[in-house]
Length: 114
Image 1 (cartoon, rainbow, N blue to C red):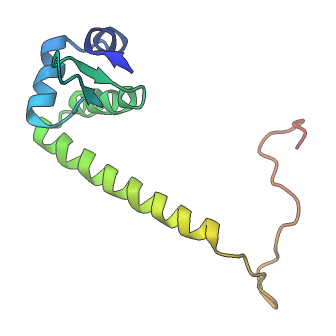
Image 2: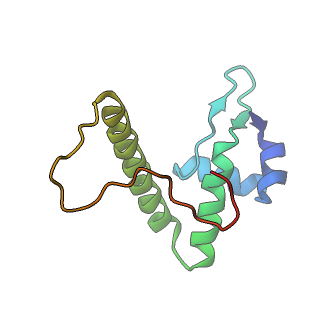
């Protein structure tokens, strides 16, 4: 966890901007200390703030960025749910399939041992 000042330096986003993003719900701190009110951010949120910066540079409004972020979060949750269910299911080989099944790993680079 990073204090807001550390997070500000790492992300190169001013403190006032981070507080504003919290106020409008665009980037809520991972944790807020109840006694001091100090905001703490996670390393994962550095990725989110980078996405926000990129969308701003592309000309999106904060409202549009917020909608996109919500959409990405929902898709991420859906993907995680699918991954959980597929891990619990057993894979069944398909017999008489017209598509040959690969038994060896695919090499993406030459001279790389797999």
